[in-house]
Length: 201
Image 1 (tube, rainbow, N blue to C red):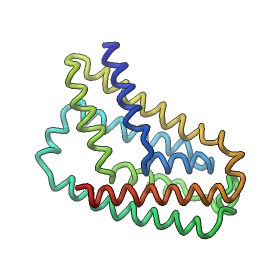
Image 2 (cartoon, helix red, strand yellow):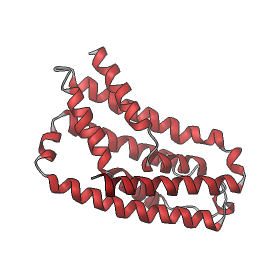
Image 3 (cartoon, rainbow, N blue to C red):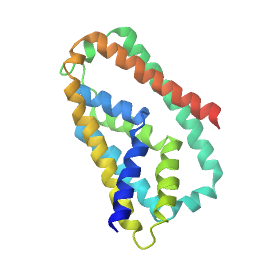
């Protein structure tokens, strides 16, 4: 059981570690110190639900409905293109309004809507959590629950560290130019992922 739990934790963290639309958004919110707890909870809870579906065998069902994957893929492409464009527009506007504690505060509902769409409209998250983690957990018969719980804990600890650890970079982002660079990086990341979804098949 311990081996299954350790593997679940490590695999989950390694899968989430790569920079993506969701991680970029969590980092940005952490730097803004805006609704960080809610964003972290939304990401971790979403992952926990998807991991649970994978561990309980939902991947088999999703494999029988290929049209769902295509719908999610193109929906994700459109959303990522639009969100990336908004980030580029913010970069063009300059970084003054993006300083922590300054400028207009985004409502909690809008922030949660954005992070949930970034999470659930991304086909890769299903491949990582439902399909991949689900298949790996099958290697631990009798201990799949331990694997899944540990994987969910890995997700929660990663997003907590990313969201709240971002504030350590606050001195760097006191400079508006740093925010402009971040917005460009986030926008480019969104568009790169969108291109990968559109042309990667």
